[in-house]
Length: 87
Image (cartoon, rainbow, N blue to C red; front, side):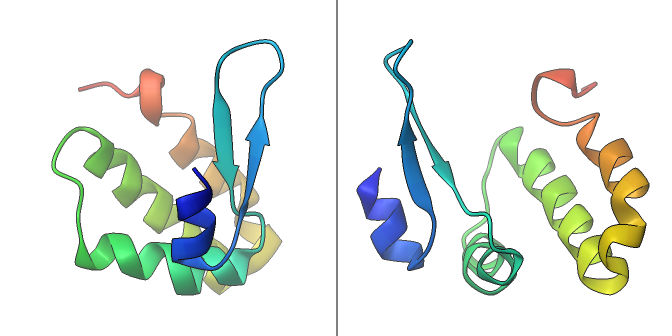
């Protein structure tokens, strides 16, 4: 997981104590927009996660344009991502 931090030059790893799992976080919007999104624009995902990525990108674009004024629209987008996605 530390390779993600090195590769994207941002983010952090959180190890969960109650399960055998860790998570990669990027909290700074500029790092998400300038480091993370361009990578997946160039190297797309090829499964259902590609739909989640496109929704994530749409939410990021809304935030870039409208900032916190777009929070409700972003919540609507993310409410249908991952396990909540209707195929």
